[in-house]
Length: 112
Image (cartoon, rainbow, N blue to C red):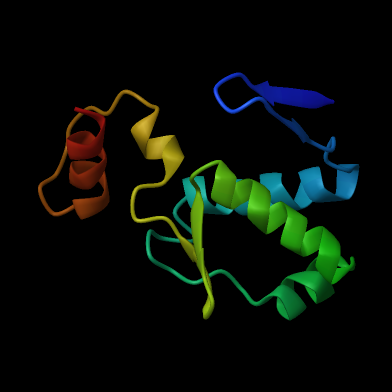
């Protein structure tokens, strides 16, 4: 599947995620949405994720790239972390904001 960037004339080929990658992405995404992995919290290491999902490091890394590109996590040379403003908070209607929840406030400021 090709996706064209009309401004730069660049064509990127985006591979369809494998069923295993989709399972990993959905599992981690649900943990983030449920609050099991809070904003700023580190994701388990690639090795730990590889062992828990019984798959290859490449599959884990591709899932991490998808989560990063979707706004759920950020990556650094030291590891991957849940985004301070996860995309599920920025794309939803938010009611009853508490001032102590900096992720929601940051998200609202970002989306204004």
